[in-house]
Length: 216
Image 1 (cartoon, helix red, strand yellow):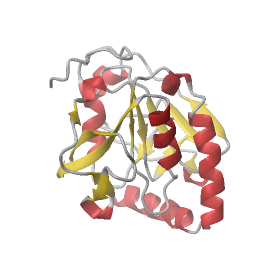
Image 2 (cartoon, one colour; image 1 turned 60 degrees about the horizontal axis):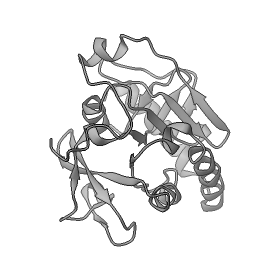
Image 3 (cartoon, one colour; image 1 turned 180 degrees about the vertical axis):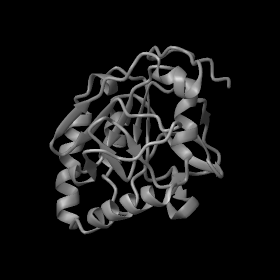
């Protein structure tokens, strides 16, 4: 991450860290309610969601709701620098243990789920803008993971409104979000049909529930 990106990210995260527990809870509840109504999430058979950490949007309610709806839920585990994989989660309390950077991650022994089985991914980040561009936390894990999804799989970012700026610095490898959900509502972004190929090359077309042979 460039010096400018780091400075922008640090400034916004400092503001996010100043949210009170009550504010974070209230705003997270509004975000969960909006996510639960998204057609992209309702239609998905397999949902990938991050496990919230520190001052992030609380994702426990999203994960529990997806499980209650009978959806398969996968969460990320860091395997190596710039490399993470998704693992199936069936119990939010029993299936997590402290992982890289202290972030809760799926425990050993859970099923690894290939990216092509994922129908929608809920993405964290430090900063987002009004075009759907995203700044992460500098590890590059989502930058390397998202291109492995089938083309067209919805990328749904969730964040607090204070994390949204008019514009953020982007690089050629930064994949924009399709939707951004904050406590104030849902933003949808239109990207050019060739944007995926231009940034990452070709990929498979997304169809919810497709490619479920468990290989890969």
